Length: 71
Image (cartoon, rainbow, N blue to C red; front, side):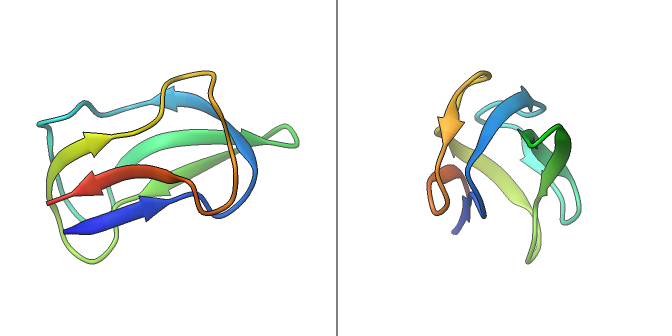
């Protein structure tokens, strides 16, 4: 199980996956926006299935906030 967490304060601009979706290493889960820059959040350390998605489009998240859990 892998937890994907935010690395900085940002807005959730777009969600590209849903709970139950299979993902592979390098796939983009969500796109964050910070200071007019788009920052893709990628699957690292192998693939799996999106077990939990803890953000919604438009959310403001803080560094360390849980974005998703991959099993």
